[in-house]
Image 1 (cartoon, rainbow, N blue to C red):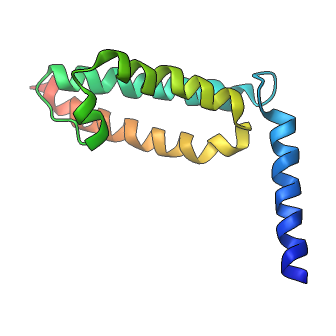
Image 2: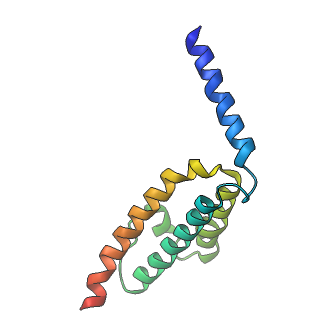
Length: 115
């Protein structure tokens, strides 16, 4: 009985979160803009690295490298859509992961430019 009530409370909270922040950039704008900017930076650094001769480690992106419209859809349009529909606080874990990926990308590119 208590477990069912707890599940309904969680579902109710998730629904309120979606209604409060979804489908708008008016709330949690910082998180949403940061999510989009980090995705664009990831795409930019990935394309720079590929042009310098590096190999794409993401298997999905490695397959799509020759298909520019698909890459634009995945790395630009999709993040904007996700940011628009998702409450900002739900984006925070993705922002942390994207920051770690960008740190890794920069860590790999710096020695190349210092040669």
